[in-house]
Image (cartoon, rainbow, N blue to C red):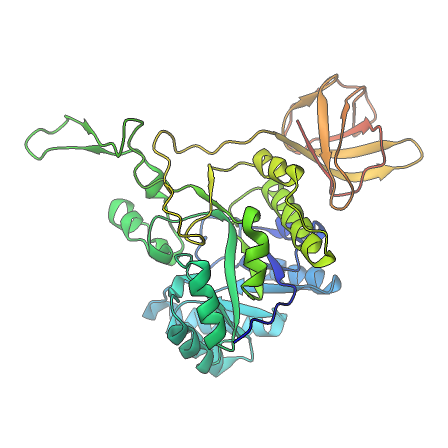
Length: 403
């Protein structure tokens, strides 16, 4: 059976309204978000009901799609409030919901006309499971991250539902994110959205009769972050990903910054478009851009099944090669002045770079700075301070300024 290759949707995380707007402006075809309850990022900003209505309106005004994550493993006490929330999402006009719990799926089918996407938390690793969920009414299956390209192709050939896979972002040490470590150590349940990321901690061994004596645990000589996964990056194999015939390519990161969302989306937008424009080749500036946002060392996950190490043993901290300084909120073409909403400290004579939603990046030195009242200043140390600076080139609104 041949695979029908169509241009896949680029799906981006939306941790709050600003990140949603950035994702769509920088090129995402669709976004996914969580409400204040019932999604697996309970400690993110998330969306109030009023914000959900604004998010749906903004997304649909651009002709794009918006999906709500309702992917907790629900308990009996959740069901009444869940029913009300699902009915709200239906009225609000979200394009689909992501679910992992069969009870939530059943409730959504009974009470709403919402399209249903099966979350990666449901751990779909074979075509029979995918077909089972499809037969239950799911229009899309988000496959488990533990699959190779060959396995994805096999599922595609045996299931009529759309398939979605992760192509970029943090990985979980637990199978399909089904972790009990956080619950055991802290009482915060990852399957209820309250993960403490216990896998990123540094561990030592304590012998029962020797309280207070800590013995190092090490997979090798570097250290003991034995469960600290590298980040997924399938950019080097994006052509192979597209040829697998999946309908949606998903970026992880509802807890990440607007800088992360904008930079990653722009890179994958360019890569996908270049493939379908017929001029595809891996460009150095794409990889340079991905290095500028906060990340752990990149790997290809299970996609290639190449057996390369997937953990980082010496540190749990991410790295980046650029600092996020602010967002361009306005541009005056007559005076060639950009209005910046500050997100990191910057100062006069500093060299900065502008990442634009559509245009090419450019760099310049800050030659002058003015506050919101027009008074000249030397630096911008205050969070979200409004600053005006002369720019060397026209700059798009929603551009990100970095150093």
